[in-house]
Amino acid sequence: MMTSSNRPLAVITGATSGIGNVFARRLAASGHDLMLVARDEARLDAIAAELARAHGVRVEGVAADLSIDADIARVADRLRIESRLAMLVSNAGFGTRGTIETADPAGQARMLRLHVQATHELVHAALPGMLARRNGTIIVVASVASWSPTAGNVNYNATKVYQRMYCEALAHELVETGVHVQALCPGFTYTEFHDRLGSGRKGIPGWAWLPAERVVDESLAQARARGPVVCVPGKRFKLIVFLLKYAPWVLGSLRQRYRRDRLNVTPE
Ligand SMILES: NC(=O)c1ccc[n+]([C@@H]2O[C@H](COP(=O)([O-])OP(=O)(O)OC[C@H]3O[C@@H](n4cnc5c(N)ncnc54)[C@H](OP(=O)(O)O)[C@@H]3O)[C@@H](O)[C@H]2O)c1
Image (cartoon, rainbow, N blue to C red; front, side):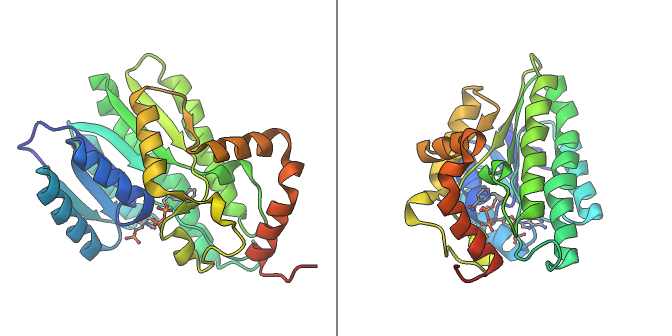
């Protein structure tokens, strides 16, 4: 446990790359001690050393696979005893390829545990202390995909709906508690996500991508202002979400292209 510091503590899952890594950089720069969670221990150690050196804060890497029950419980136990816990960013996540029929069942099970079970258990562990202190911020990284059902993306879509709705409902429980919750719903963001997915950025036009820095800066600004629960970074994605909700046919050809790429089928 990190004891000899008065700085607020931020815990970020999936901090070794992409959106989580930018959260770590921004929160270290604004004077938070950090607990960074991901599977790759060497990468965690390198980031922890770099951020501690650059910002004079304490950074601890906790190697954990949050799709495994024992590791979820180990991280949750740490959250329960951290009396300086000011922010939890539940961000770790991944996509898969293939339909429900063809995708590797083990990968689908891992996604359900990471996006659903780990999200809930970490929030549940963070809340009692935050409520007692009447202070805290919880950010869960969901996705614009929570409004956009897509072939080849069934469990990803469904788990991202879970994460967004979890936050929207939780916000009703947290009114006037001093604890704020946000469902961060980015659109396509330059990270390692699509490289890990093995799809690259094929089929998605260049204008549709946001830098991770932009996503994180909008999220933190909205959270600091205690703004709306749902945060959709970027004007173009706010428009896309509006269209997905109220006029999905307008995005028909774009969504067809994306579907063909997801399913790896030749255009008709
Ligand atoms: N990029 C996009 O276009 C986009 C759009 C909307 C939403 N999102 C969401 O944004 C979040 C972050 O993704 P990203 O785009 O930043 O992707 P990324 O660059 O691939 O980062 C994913 C992070 O999650 C960690 N992680 C993956 N599986 C894990 C596990 N089982 N246990 C612990 N940590 C795990 C990875 O680290 P290790 O490999 O070291 O474990 C890595 O730090 C995800 O929830 C994703 O669904 C992304």
